[in-house]
Length: 99
Image 1 (cartoon, rainbow, N blue to C red):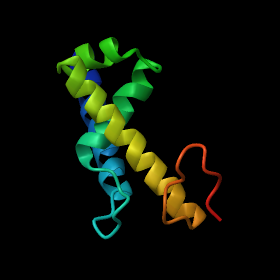
Image 2: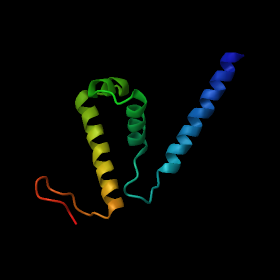
Image 3: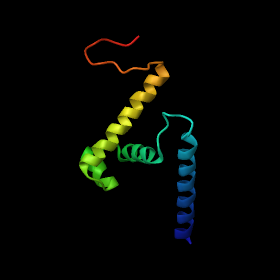
């Protein structure tokens, strides 16, 4: 009985979580994360800022693949922040700021 109740609660929480993910994603927005990117970000957060090795092992991919996923997340984050600030170009290191 208790196990059935816990399983039921777990399923409801999981479905609620998925609903939240898909509501946050807007197909009309170019800067919205894909479902896989969202799950990767959630895994990183849930693991408490893991090392690359820990992240790769958790999602069961090679370290280069994990590094690629993280680099994509970082790039999306930079793009989204630049869009919010009204910037359309990325600054080149050592060449000043974009106004």
